[in-house]
Length: 319
Length: 319
Image 1 (tube, each protein chain N blue to C red):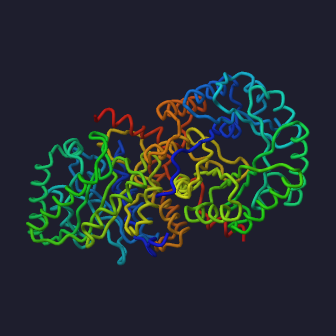
Image 2: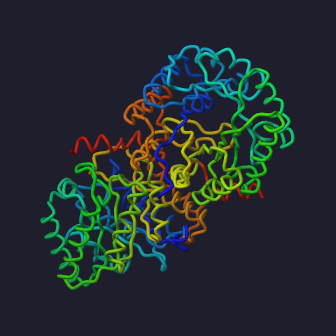
């Protein structure tokens, strides 16, 4: 396991992912409480809100109140998500509190793009051209490509590495045309299709073709392989992961109601800790934040660590 | 991934593991229905009952009724569990229906042995000497060593590979003294302490010292690393795993109420299928058996595949 990174950066997406799929809107104060609890765990990247249409995602109608309400810590990057110029405008109002950067968001499956955004490949490329221009005009750097459905799609089935490479090339062409430099690439297993071998294959091909890109994995645990896939990423030296406390989230448009969402931050952090990989996270504090999320949502979340507890606790007791 | 096996044998322990921890006794007819459903999935090893004290494990007071009641298929090994001469005698009544063999059961953590069985290391060795002799006297072959707490212990903390090797040596000494040949060794992560690197380290050391032993892994998903650990086993060429449909089970004596139990058979089978490893299992039929287990127990089981569904179903729809 010589390629295991010595440290890993976990971007927490629980607040944003978790609240977008809830049927009943949560009080803003509870969202803020969760963000503040996460701020005390050692996480350095927390996605706190989604500036999306309140009609499409009623759970984030209060994005402004939440972003205005949490207590920022100076060493944490708080981020938000948006999909169009209106969302960008809303985010810009909080440039003192949020770490703003733009992503070129594409899907390796055209069928998913159509289902999720009602745009085919060409339509999404055109939308991203416009969005990139809008970011530049607003002075917001565009530094990342985010690739959805990079490992398979509920609507299109298997996604070949060739399709992944083509979609990344699309994104890089948009960036080049706009004169921006992409540093980060996030490969998202949006619907939980990946397996460890596929992770290794796709990561190796991307690395081989674009060695300058910094890779991140956004993994879902839809079929229970999420942590095994993260492990495959770690073996390939991937040092950036998205995750959600408690395993919050899941894609509201992927047609799998009740399926587990993102890999749980505490499971990934526990894996890293046990492998001797630094995350900067206080696992006990993170577990407490997960339990707070369960109290807020009034249901059990998928994270096994919330049930089984950390090993540190047992080690302390045994010692 | 050159050491991945081409086929894997999964021993289903759901019925035995699942019903032992339920508070309210389940009707025998429902246990039998689950066993019969599992018999239709392509599984070739199913542990159907536990011949243990009804006082200690009331959930298996009806072991005789269950074993007498299910419908055996000729190509399936149905097994049962017992811990003493009384249990062996009960099992012997069903030698026409059950595949009977003896295990030398030891723990790599003395603290666990004391908590679980009220015996220290010497006491457990003595008990296994007697049990091995009883098996020989009854004409039941003793072919396996089962090692509990092989990767860590809630009571003793970390378990070193040296402790694992010492416990295996204990087991082999018992076998040699009794004149029996051990073919199989099951390493059990009874309380969910293992991580993928540790799996690789321990498996490599065991293989190095005893290359003649056939290894199996019995993994728990207590902290969400179960399938990543199974993947580590597969990478090491391990081709035998225990698992439980739906993720049933968990150790009733390990002091972690509510923690996930065994790795879910359908998650492991899905992993193997996606890696091109043959299991002989009809995944859709297995998912149906998992849903039956949920109806019987009237609660959601931990298996993500029961929520997310198989990929074959989506592939068929996409094609």
